Image (tube, rainbow, N blue to C red; front, side, top):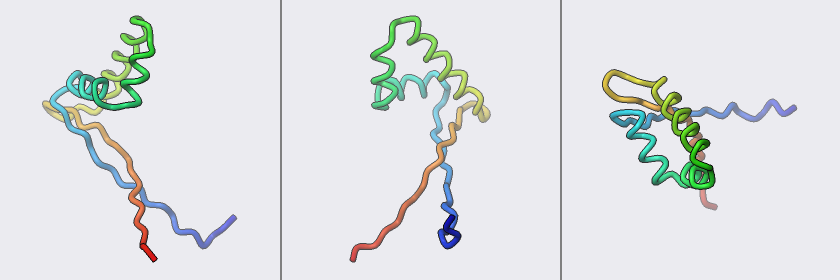
Length: 80
């Protein structure tokens, strides 16, 4: 195991919408992966996905809005 590799710091940002339902509408209409998955499901599975998404996002309610955390890794390089 290499020990000379520094740990990789992740950062966090938040996607904020007025409601979980508003976030669902945005993601299902504009986020490629979710849009594609949703389109390939039968109606019962679409509704199950919708409920699961809204429940997940509602767990991050912050006052009148939802603040869904998103972890990211910023990679910086140099041109030679």
